[in-house]
Length: 248
Image 1 (cartoon, rainbow, N blue to C red):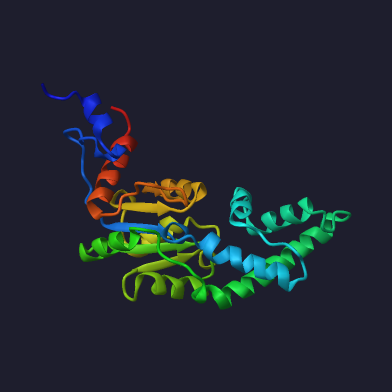
Image 2: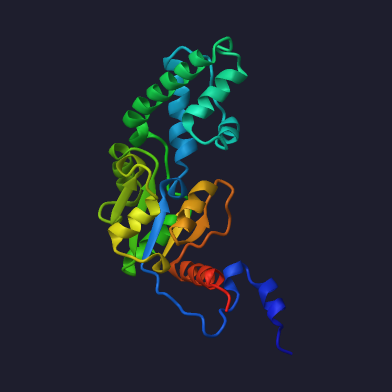
């Protein structure tokens, strides 16, 4: 007896393994855009140690744990996270202006420390993603990286992580303020959104990638079962395009 479609759905390891319906247009994958935070755990392996060093540099006895830092990542930016920590600990609690100024001082120190130390930090590509990048590069699929960090350290770090000549374009937020980094990356690659897929490192990044029209995979510290080969990426991409098609 042939299995039902529902049985096939349940038996598949991944949701994108479900057979593609007849008549769905397939766009061959031409580009993969990685958020740097998806490629590696830049927050906890790069920014966190730099923040702890910055706290010490300005004379604050504050040291964030990984668990505490991840709690603070729900706040929209670094300055908000530092200010929230200062308020929680009662630092300059009598004057919010002083708290904000101290937060600015910590963030400035952190940026300077990160620029100098990032290439010596213990940062590694997430498990399996180097295999995917090699697979894509060999298949002639363009690779791009986007990041909220400064180009001065992002570009050398990307080269250090994945090698020379692999990534076609790197787009950083300070270079294109108020722009969707994924849209800029696609434009620089000359690839339409329906021919690409993005790996985002946060829910906010996932929303921006989706807004750019890209099929999107969210990668985080607790992610398991992410596609690690071009074939799996193509299936994810096809399912995304199928789900995004307007109803007849």
